[in-house]
Amino acid sequence: MLHPLGVEPRALFDQPEDALFVVPCKGGAIDDLIIGNLEHGAVSLHAHALAIVGCDSPEMRVALGAARARIAMREEPLPQPAAEGVERLVPALLRVLGVAAPGCDEAELVEIAVEECVREACDEVLRASPLLAELVRRGKLAVLRLAYAQSSGLRRV
Image (tube, rainbow, N blue to C red):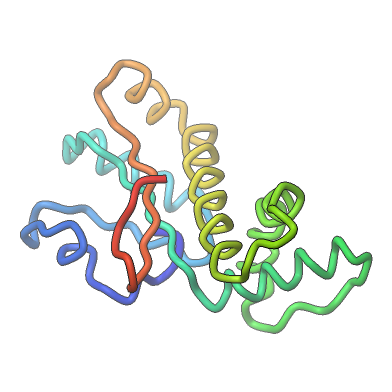
């Protein structure tokens, strides 16, 4: 998970307690601990799918504001303690703002931003773990890119 979802993952996927191995990842931070846990799930627990789930969050909206400020050539300080998690999202959001339609409303922009952050997290996981990348290449592990919104539920990215 890239951000807290506001709903239990087991309920989200309609699975029993022992069917999921959940590795929360606040602020999109993919570190060695996260990678190690994902590799453990794939190898030791024989997981056949890796679901990366992103959602709208307060951090996402702050990061979107920071990306807008960068485009406007303003360096605004990021609020603490969210600065590290927010800063990590800014590059993906700069790409989103660079291609978003001029009349794009805030809700649509956030939706596109969540999708881009999910794509980036998936790519980062596979770059950071040759083991997971090899399992995907061999067809032993599927990577699901998903976005969640309370209003519309879970959708593929």
